[in-house]
Length: 203
Image (cartoon, rainbow, N blue to C red; front, side, top):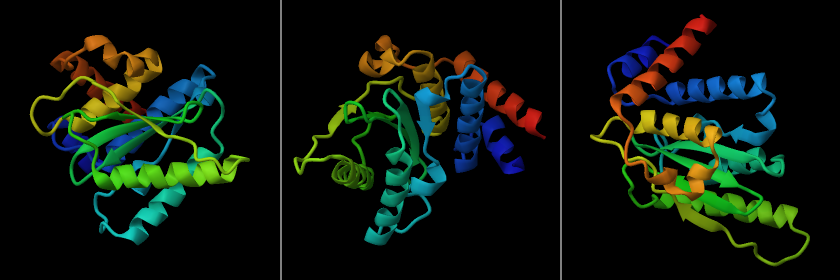
């Protein structure tokens, strides 16, 4: 916990724990207003490539975790999946109603092959299990032009901000955050303060 507070305070690369704590905070806020049925969160520690060998076994295990999380998803519910690829955070948002996968990268880089394979495999397994027909259900990929990070170390803060903004207004996914180019320092500081306040409440 001390390490997590340190990286947040000094604008260092955020740990998996930092993102997990943020999703816990968002979930508790949703619970307070009776909105937990609208959103679901996948544990980034369980599915991210960072810290793992890029092997087929690793991908199969992570695919199973995603499938298990998506199986019970309700109609109208969006699923957040923060994902870390060797020191870079991106956000995946899955809409099972439309079979759409939204990809948000603070650096606007192409999706890494591990992540695409992971999601393709998970969606294929779900479609086989849940579809009564043998017809393959098409997955719709949508790259969102979300606010872009300056520098190299704010990706985690941006992914946290993305989740907060999407919960506030789902339309930002389809409208590319209404043209917002970046987050200013005050907006990022607000995220840090909210994270720190939540942690202090739990101590």
